[in-house]
Every structure is written in C-alpha cells, then in structure tokens.
Image 1 (cartoon, one colour):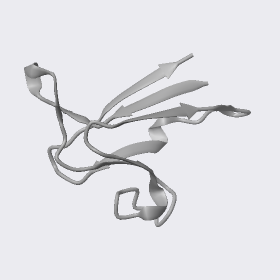
Image 2 (cartoon, rainbow, N blue to C red):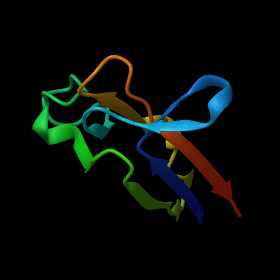
Image 3 (cartoon, rainbow, N blue to C red):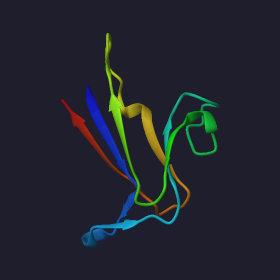
Image 4 (cartoon, rainbow, N blue to C red):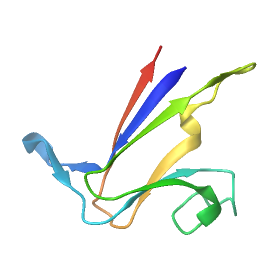
Length: 89
C-alpha cells in the first residue's frame, strides 16, 4: 500500500510556501466526461481549499498498484499550486 498527500499551497520561490487564492481540484483523467478538469464533475476526487491537506491511499491490486499517474490537479487560478508527496511502502 502507498500513501499520497496533496497540500494546497503554492511555491513562494526561495521563501517557502504561500496559500492559494482559490481551490485546488484533485481529478482523475478518463472518468466522467473524460476532460479530467474541474469542469468535469464526474472526474473530481476531492476539492481542497487554500492550505488544506488531503491524504489518500493507493491500494495494491492483483495486477500491481493503482498508479498515482492517473491523478492530476486543476486550480481556480493560474498561479495556484499543490504540493504532492508519495510514500511507497
């Protein structure tokens, strides 16, 4: 089992992290209408407000592990960001 953590913060360059202006959307491509962005309600896994953290588990299946490459982020604003950490164990 692996753990993935999404933190709704954007880079402040050499000064660490800043809070976002809008929301961050964790989406899964290939589900819903297939667009894989915040306009496709069927693809949204979670919505993070600025500074919020989401913890998820990637569970091993018979064929291997559910891939973290299936998940993407979208944002309300161009300069907003998300820090993503993957723990594999």
